[in-house]
Image (cartoon, rainbow, N blue to C red; front, side):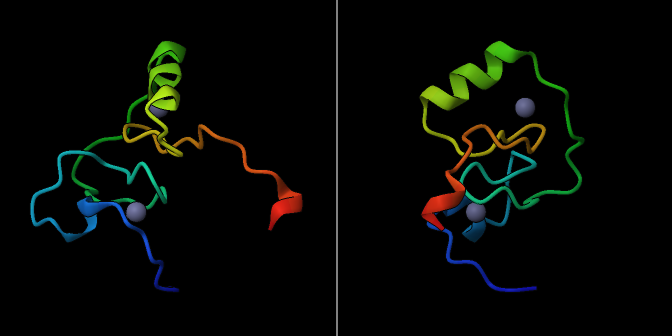
Length: 68
Ligand SMILES: [Zn+2]
Ligand SMILES: [Zn+2]
């Protein structure tokens, strides 16, 4: 697996309270069960500029394929 440079400080923690990283979307704590979120949870997460939902791992912000 390729090492990603993710600035989210959850990666450096020994105890992580969310399943997914909000920045890169990798599973941080597989012991936390994934959730199915109502849309308002995702709307709020988008406003706090999370790229991924920390509960279900859904991508919240679609990135433009042309910018890659
Ligand atoms: Zn990350
Ligand atoms: Zn979600």
